[in-house]
Amino acid sequence: MRYDLAFALCCCKSFLGSDDVEGGDFYSLLEVDRDASGDEIKRAYKRQSLQMHPDKLAQRGKVVTEEDQERFTRMKEAYEILSDPHKRETYDAIGERGMKWLDEPFSVDPQELAHNFAKSSALDRSKIFGIFVAIAVAVFLLPILICMHVDGIFGPNASWFAVLTPLWIWDAFILFYHSRVIMMGPINRPEHIPPEEWVDPLPMKKRVFSLVRFMLIIIFEVFCALRLDNIVGWTWSIVFIPLYIWEATTLYKKFPLARMRIVTVEDLETALGKPFAEFSHAEKELISKRYSVVPSTTSPEFEAAQKIKTRARQDMVKSGFRIIFVLLLIAQVEFNLDWSWWLIFSPFWIMTFLICYANYQAFSEVQRMAAEKDPTLFGQRPDTDIENQSNDYGAMGKDGDGTPSTAAAKDSGRPDISEEEKEELKAQVMASGSRMCSKCCSQGFLLLIALLFVGKIQGAGYPSLIIISPFLMVAGTILCCLGCAIFGMTEVPTDGVEFDTGSLDTGTVAEASINTPMPAPISGVNYAPPPEPNDPPKNETNSTLDVEKGEVEKSSGKPEPHTIKPPPPQPIDLLDDYEQLQKSSSRGELHDLD
Image (tube, rainbow, N blue to C red; front, top):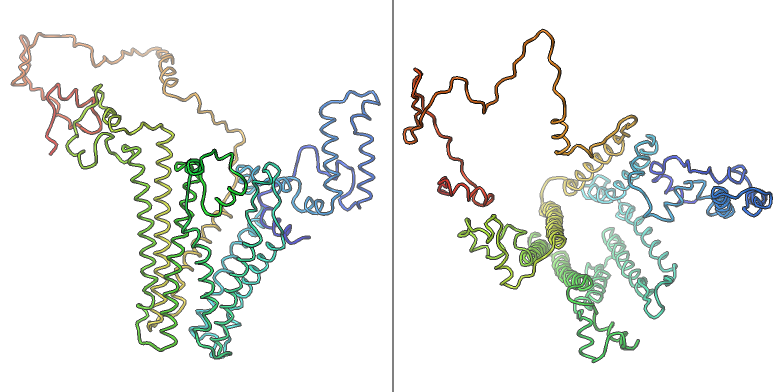
């Protein structure tokens, strides 16, 4: 079996479920065994074609139905799969449903995946959990070995080349990937794109450039291992030469993007004095080399180009800080400077602060733009600024219904936006906020690791494994959660259970309660319903109400006069309920805000 099929079978077996496809499997359609040879499958196809072909059925006087045509089409599909050794091996491994999911990944139904996984066996789930455990071991094995070697657990004669064995394995896999990408050749042009408009998204020059950059990293790792094992007596300045070149290639790659000029189609048409459709191919090629052309400043292409330009500038700033840090590190190690390691790592502290501050600035900019388009998104009045809203608590709309008037907004020239645009603004603000939180949290996590590392270099007495302990705790927590989710998922039985809540609305419930007949009276029991609260008493007497004293004076009868206390006034929320505010103001029940 091929390795890709074995891995797919190990990962996806629990999600595929049983392969009970309507119409039977391919072997039963051809009426052959699973170990049949290619010649046997070919003879079986010819035999079944004579029996199932619609023309043959019509010649025998049988009326051809749609089921007959579908059965013949399915039999023909079975022959196409089983006659190809590559497809047959895939079919034998993952079945017909698995082949369809491999060919059309977006046709996968998430509910069906969850249903199949809930019915899978413990062995299939253990395979998936084992894959996650293997990934965690592969990621954390190298830093654990390095920490153990630094603490002297492996002894003084341990070689760094042996300790870095997981790193060499990772490099071999990545190098194999780069070589496969280069040998893949140019990407074929899709049929719906004209030849003059097709641009290879992964040109060969870019592939080779990525391979060269990765080779520089491998050379730097080998130089460090040789220097740490004292196999070579080079200075650290020579050891870091591949890293210098790698940073130079980074600047070479990001500098054109950071200086990219973004122009619109309208600007080009104004500059050249003709429509964009009349531009020649040479003109378009020359423009594409110097500018990034977008339809307009409000188009998604303009936002994408701005993000690429901003990211390139940030990468250049990060590269500059890395170069400064390497220079300080070499000066400390090479010239035996007695500087504090906290000072040597100062570029890292500054870069962490700048990254968090830049993300906060980006979030503030998105929030400001959203507030300009829709001030009500952040609780502001559309006709006033934030500073002026403290004096407008009791402001009413023109129609008196408590809705803020939009006349001032119209006078200010701000266009009204639809509900869809409001939802889009909310989504943009939430996405920017989540991005800021994730960046700041990740930088804080890395800052904690760096603090533990620098403290160890400065002479702290804790073991080196304490440095990577935050990573280990997070990985352990994630594995525990994955294990509970994988082994704890079960299928909920729904046989005989009907969920029909479409008719349970307020009107239906009220109507049902009204139309429900009263129960019949029980024989032998005299039952009188209680009087309604609004029914007048039987012995009614004439009385007058003294409003000032709150007393009821009766003209007849001996009962003592009693006092009626008016209900206490309820505080009114002047910001939320304008209608209640009007009613309360007419009754004189307004209270001081303090």
